Image 1 (cartoon, rainbow over the protein chains, first blue to last red):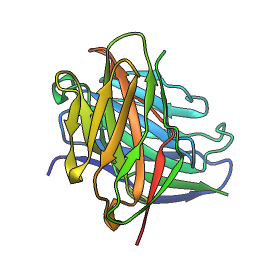
Image 2: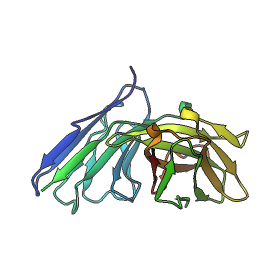
Image 3: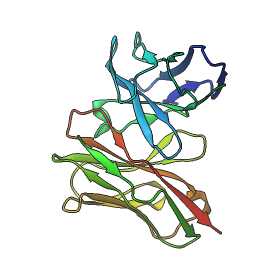
Image 4: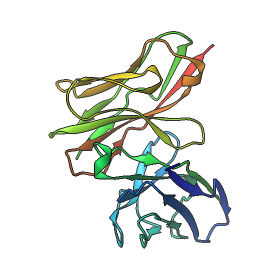
Amino acid sequence: DGGITQSPKYLFRKEGQNVTLSCEQNLNHDAMYWYRQDPGQGLRLIYYSQIVNDFQKGDIAEGYSVSREKKESFPLTVTSAQKNPTAFYLCASTSPGTGGYEQYFGPGTRLTVT
Amino acid sequence: AQSVTQLDSQVPVFEEAPVELRCNYSSSVSVYLFWYVQYPNQGLQLLLKYLSGSTLVKGINGFEAEFNKSQTSFHLRKPSVHISDTAEYFCAVSVGFGNEKLTFGTGTRLTIIP
């Protein structure tokens, strides 16, 4: 089955540690995205990538980093510089052929930092 | 820049009653509009989308939405809700063809009362 996988589902870290969230897609999509979701705030775009080896900052990129070395993979690193990293993180992908750039979402990773 | 407003953060509805979830957008150019549903601790799933053509769009699970350009609205409706419709619903907009970014509203939590 084609889709997007995110791992792990739940992640716990101590304050001051960097942590990397995984996102893999087998939909052959060109573009991939990372969103952060907090209660009552909807989805906010962290980073996105439209092609391999290229990515752009979204609305809340500070304290995060990404890489896009392969078309299928777009890992997100939450660094110790992120002031409030506890949140639900969603990965998505799309391509021009999907019609209006409909985005397909993964199941999410809930990160808790204490 | 475009924006999306979901006027109601929470909507309680009795089972088998009709429901309307409101969405207004702001954009000076043509838009694509989407409604997504999110069940607890899961990713987002597309309910329906408007790209062009008929302003009444039908989606999955018996939902439909009407695009109203003059009122810049894209309200979601269902004539008779079920317990299984309990979820959070997000309206999103992308601007013009070639823009791969979506802007999301803050979401409406739909609660079905037995």
